[in-house]
Image 1: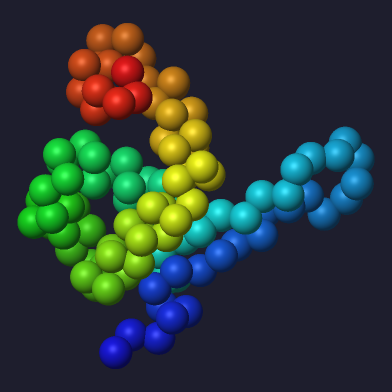
Image 2: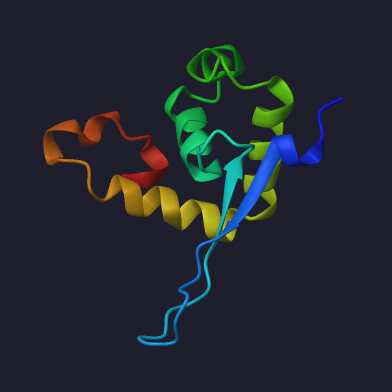
Length: 104
């Protein structure tokens, strides 16, 4: 069984000073991989929610880690979805057809 800390790591990216004030940010990452949960979830939708293709994209991560990321995203969709949308906003126009329909 995988230890919980190896599945997801919450990183507090809050500013360390009070000026200018910014909202607190906690980012969920998959274990110590550095991959944020929203990035993995974005990939999951880019491969049309095909588990085998998704696993192939992150073959160095465990199945438990990937399932934990998807479960976290489902529970915290109000935080994850805007991060994905924000990322897609920077995709150049010629490549936007590759973006899953829900974010176009």
